[in-house]
Amino acid sequence: MTETIVEIVEKFLAYSDEKLEELAEKNQALKIEEKDTKN
Image 1: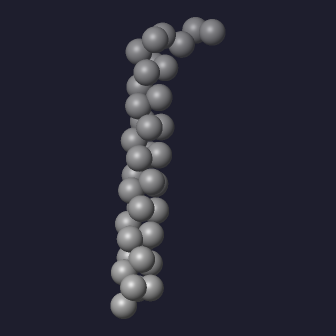
Image 2 (image 1 turned 180 degrees about the horizontal axis):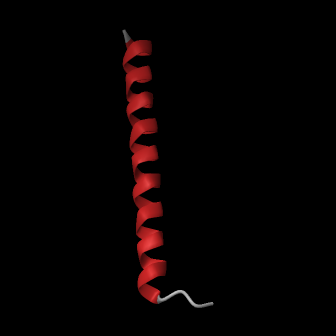
């Protein structure tokens, strides 16, 4: 394992950002669905 801690952390942060964006999109879609069903 030749990766430095910095490289591992950078990968992890990039991965986390991607996941957060995905979750935010799903959350937004759910909110829109909720509004549609209430009206």
